[in-house]
Image (cartoon, rainbow, N blue to C red; front, side):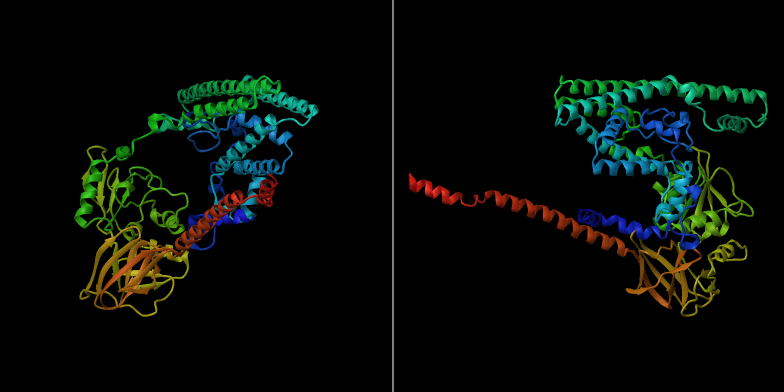
Length: 602
């Protein structure tokens, strides 16, 4: 128990910060940042198929990754593979080695295997999702198989210990030998049966695959009907070709697994008959596992996929329109002056633009709830299906990269490389701006509804959840306001601000109260939540310097706890080693006296 506590304390950073962040992310917050969790269907995507568990034994049984994958997941880059040798040894440990560690690993591994099935085993996983703390904060159930692989590897080590340990009696030696024969024979028979009867056990067709091919054909050739017999025949032929390729993959990898199992069984039998020593058995089995896993791993990570560190930038495309936007950014004064929405692909997953400039797009599996709400309720107008005007304006979106014109935006550049058009949004609000009017709307749903209304002008009015302590002065033609960005970085932003009357400064930065702190002329000031997802700070009349710094207490506390705990653990190790060394140097009690008596007797 003490060891577990010390281990947790040593890794307090980053887990304390992650725990704090969870409360504001889609993994732990509901609409507007209140209590909530992931939706069941979203959390259970990428559940491992029940039949797909065979990939632990035969790597490409379900097509591997890419277009030939035919399992129930939306797509995958590759299988979860452990190999026949490791599984054989793990089964031997579970079957014949009655130790607490083995049973603990076996039970834990079995539950993790069941958790990986996700929506395919709702009886268990729905109960865990609804009842067990934090279970609803995770998604992609197949991730459990990474832990299962570790458990199987440890169990494989126990299995190797079981077959190679010296027997205490002839009966025990005979029992171990029989167990090896039975387990090896069963493993070989299982794989042989899977290969020979694959056509009976598997159809190698993805659910709805024929219809998917038909839809692809119709999209490419709109003049064709989905019911056209030629289209249907083509789709069936295409799927039949894929099925044949998948069956070939299954057979090839099945024979491969069988080969490794036969070699491992041969080594085990030779050892049990006393023909090879224990070290040769151990080294031979380890070598087989390395060759097996190395061979499968190289299908997905090899020299062709490696890139020299000094050439990594060459892997990220830079187009002519990127250079145009970067030049506009330099003219504006550098980073922190505007954002870009790129519609070159799905903006919620396309991350390429973010490498070059501040973008509204990109993907994060645990994004802030306020950002997700923005995409769900403001980004696309639910009534018209078009881009939400206020949503783009509020987030300082000056440029949109699109495939064609968008009403209300001005084309300023056409890419010769891609054909994409850079459009300028004339209504984009600055990164920081003053407003002189405030609407107080406590309910999150009502705030979102108000932001979608055409008569709401975010340039003049801010929506707050609570009233201000002091009133602000409306803006008119005689008002004097100025905002200048002095410094912009990931942990600190600084502005020079000036206003002739008390007003509210709205900042197009995402509201996150768990780490950002504001200071006006060096004095702490509160950061308010404005317009659902932005920040705001009341500014008194006059010229001031506003500084925002990201300094979460959870990070600082986690660093200190980790540092102190690590020092205690390693310091304790050094002290224990020193004590052991000191005790070894001390003479045995009575040794000195015996030496003196021997000398006197001589």
